[in-house]
Image 1 (cartoon, one colour):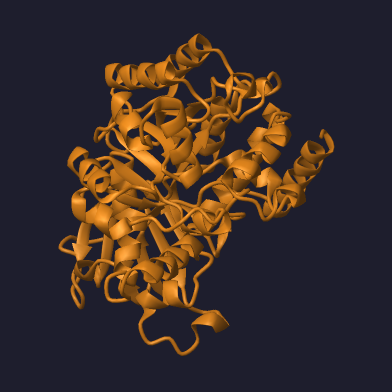
Image 2 (cartoon, rainbow, N blue to C red):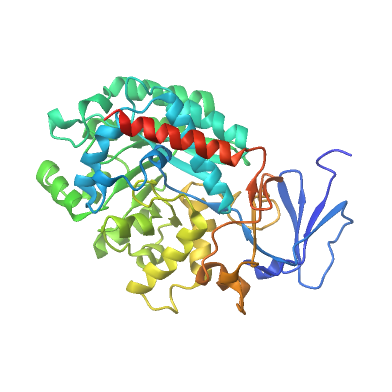
Length: 451
């Protein structure tokens, strides 16, 4: 029997985010081929069943923004209790010493942590390239392929250092032709375009305060010519707004539009400080927003206007952000943070658990320009997260789906990517987790000792 003939019925989940799949789903190869209504049987015979009666079934969670390398600088004392700009300037000098070996370990640890939280598509925004770190994206591709995780990787960049009024040290700034040439190389070598793509490449100049206007415009041109997506940080803090007004004579969104970025090809990290008119412009353009609740709270950056952005037409996704600002890579945990933080701005009846699950799945997929992930519809990729409610935190919960967020789910019991189980029994397949953590922790100590 071939893989395309094998039919797996994930049967009768305890609860499911899609009411139409209350009886489970059927998987063949890499795809979902059938949703089963509650109390019903699949339309065609199956070869295998998985009893999901003790599991809550979700589409695989989709992360839209991260900095894998920052797992090496979690809870770093010199950077604690700072806002974004002083936090960055403190950490840039540490990150400038990264090497390829440390990058590989940081990426693996971040991807494994995301997988264990139910995340099947990981995104990373990497923009630190030093003399010792030149193959960062290449090693991320290799790691994602080995782990069997879907990856949206971005070729970030910084071209304006402290000598020219930017924030990063000159040791991590690259000349713009080097950035453009390497961006094209990565697209040509790794970007997959078909449905079910496991690896995609996007272009991601870091931020308005670390790249030039010329690089922003050239990145937009390159993305258009190669039909890839664009990503950057924008409107994260009021300091950034003041910086753009001083340097460019315009607000961050006006600068983005002037650079050719206000399109449905773009998704933005944070997107906090937009006014009413800007939200409408973003919505008309279809520009996505990667909402980063924990990071926004840790750095005191502000409250993203998620509901207004979504109502205007902007896809809203969810992101853990870098582990030096959120200090974790757990997308299940981030869903709870999004729920709680959203209710500081909006009514609880507006920011529901269903809405947040939608952000973490369908909304995030839209930010990445994908319709083949983020749901449980027949024809979509078989990317699934199954959670058990067998911990004390869930005892007494009446609504299993709401309990994932309200009671604080941390770890999926099973995770499937493209039809293959990648987490079973709460642990990643084919990974010695203890050994990985030991190597990663040693790499973190070495990086800190280089200062």
